[in-house]
Each structure stands twice: as structure tokens, then as C-alpha cells.
Amino acid sequence: MRMVDMISKKRDGHALTSEEIKFIIDGYTKGEIPDYQMSSLAMAIYFQDMTDEERAALTMAMVESGDQIDLSDIEGVKVDKHSTGGVGDTTTLVLAPLVAALDIPVAKMSGRGLGHTGGTIDKLEAVEGFHVEISEAEFIKLVNEAKIAVIGQTGNLTPADKKIYALRDVTGTVNSIPLIASSIMSKKIAAGADAIVLDVKTGNGAFMQTVEDAEALAHAMVKIGNQVGRQTMAIISDMNQPLGLGIGNALELKEAIDTLKGEGPEDLTELVLTLGAQMVVLAKKAETLEEARVKLQEVIDNGAAIEKFKTFLSNQGGDASVVDDPSKLPTAQYTFELPAKTSGVVSEMVANEIGIASMMLGAGRQTKEDDIDLAVGLVLHKKIGDKVEEGESLLTIHANQEDVEAVKQKLYDNITISDSAETPKLIYKVITE
Image 1 (cartoon, rainbow, N blue to C red):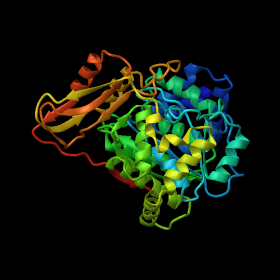
Image 2: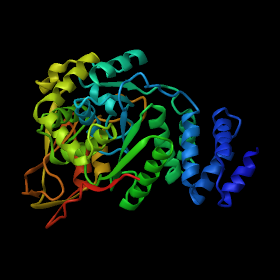
Image 3: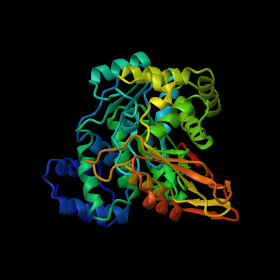
Image 4: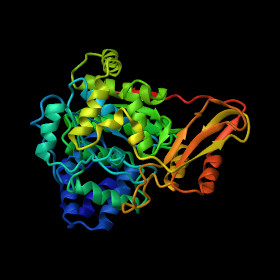
């Protein structure tokens, strides 16, 4: 086989065979196929798309390019969840213990954040002593015993995806449905899940800005998962404003604790119950989404969910007493209010830019080497559709710096108050095929 022939074949709109795709991925991972040829193929895929079969073959070739986590020693159906990212996206912190409280194994592999706020691991490290540096054997033991554990991402998971992603980033081919879908799904499949639930975000704070694009990506990922033997479901949810009220690591962890106690923000609670219901059905612990939702609400109401969170934290070295006393979490030195300049209704909150304001305080990383300040961030008091009086606080800034004028300006520039506003839908679609 010659790479140039496969580039021409895809350029002319023909489908590549699974053998050709495997040859390409193996060759590129080993350094036998140069960047310029892979860039050319990525651009051909960008313009010509891929069939469902090609997308599945590409995903599995990337899975097989590196390590695969074997979770077969864990009893039960292992369900994983993936979000395409957003601002204030605290869902994993709530979902993992909530679903585990129904005796569903949650074997979660998570990463650190790059961007607005930390990743799941950064947020959990707001709990003193908590760590993810555990062996694979200990990881499996904890999931079997407590139904929940979180481990850091292994260095050699889907190396082909890492190489291709870096290339797409500098060749204008990031925004390609088959390349995005196979990138996300390869990591989930390599991490050993039996079933996968996807939260595909749409709006000004999301990678997919329109519902149509988000739907195309969701369908692509669900089809890939189902084709390669992993039951997969997805929802499309709104990211035209931050999710929940807290943005920042310790602030989001506190919000997760509140939500597990049944006292969380309405939108975060609703999203968690919707995603959780899919996880429960895929794990075969309920026949219908309605029945699954009732079961999830029960473990919130009877305290089993928050108890599971305490067990999870202490199993991995964390001080579980923060659950009953969140004042033990890292706390910022200063708080500042952001008063509304006019009366009216909040009509727009540009999620991405509000996330950047939080990053300016130190809540996120601009480069992988940056340190995160776990204490800082924002707590919203108003969301889109809420009435506000002039002088009333729109949000509280939690900072470890005295000068936050640039942060305030960034926030004022991206929160609009009008005469009226339409509250955005939280969940646009549920996708099962």
C-alpha cells in the first residue's frame, strides 16, 4: 500500500477500507508516514467526510495504537460519561458518586484541565490529601468494593489520536465531525468502558456552536460506539451560559456537594439526572429512563449519594469531612461583588468569556505547566432570564489578588441586561442511535 494512493482515493470521495485505515494509523504512529501526508489526508477527510464504517474503523485503529485498559475484573456493566466541555461543568463530580450509589461501577479515567477551569482531577484535589496516583490493581479493587474510583490518564492511551490532534490543530482540520468523533470515542473505548453516555454541548461556550452541528457530532459518536460493540447514548445540552452557579475548582466542588445533598442549582441537578438516567439504563439497573430517574432521586433524598461521595474521597486519601464542613475547602482571600449597572433582565452571558474571566483569576491554565489556584473563581447570582435591579450583585468574584478591575471589565463586557429575555432550553435532544 502507498499513502499517496489513499490520499487520492479519499480526495476523490471514495471510502477507505478498514485495512487501509489501519495501515495509515499504524504507519503514522510509528513515524513511517510523514506529517505532510497525514495533513493532506486530514484535509481530504475534512472536505469529503467518512462513511459510518470508515469512522468506526478509524476509531478502532486509534484505540489499538496504544494501551487499552482492561476492566474485565470489575463486576457489572462499566458505564463511562464524556462531556465535550463547558464552563462550570461540574457534572462528573456529581454523577460518579450518584450512579455508584445504585451499585453501578464507575471506573473513571480523568485528566487535568487546560483552559477556563481545572479538570475533574484538579477539582477533586481541592480536597486535602485526595490523590489519583493509584495502581491499576488498586483502582480495580476500589471499584469492586466501593463501586467508584478515579485514576489519572495513562501516558500511552491512543498515541495516534494525540499525534493527529496536534496536527489538526495547526492545519485547519480540527472542526471535522469524523475526526472529532473518532478522537473522543477512541479515548473512551481504550479506557475500557462497556457503555458510554455523551453530553454534547452547544452554544457560545461550546465547541459546537449550533444545535445542528452538535446533533451531527452526537449521532456520529453514538453510531461509532454502537458499531464497535459499546452501547452509546447522547444528549445535546446548552452552553449559552455557564452551568450551575460556581466557576472555579473548590467552588465547583462545593456545588457538587450541595447537589448530591439535593440542594444544588436547578440546571445542574436536571442535567445530572438526565445523564445519570441514561447511565442507569445502560448498566441494566432500570428498564426505562423514567424509572432510572426515580432511583437516582431516591439516593439523593435518602443520603446514599452523599455518603458514597464521602467513601470515595476517603478511599483515595481525601479528607471527607469537607462534605459536612465545606469551609475546609481552599478559600480565597478576597471577595468582590459585580453590581448591575442598570435594571432589567439578564439576556446574555457569553459562557466562554466568563470562563476566561475566571482563568484570569488563576482558576484555569493557559499552558500545561501553569499552576491552578484552587480557591478562586466566580459564583453567579443571576442567570439568563433573571430580573435584576440596578446595583444588585450579578455575581461574586473570589480572588487572591486585590486588583480585579480587568476581570470586572471582562465580565461587564459579556453579561447583557435588556428589557426582556428568553431563558435558553437546557436539554435540546436525547440521541440513542
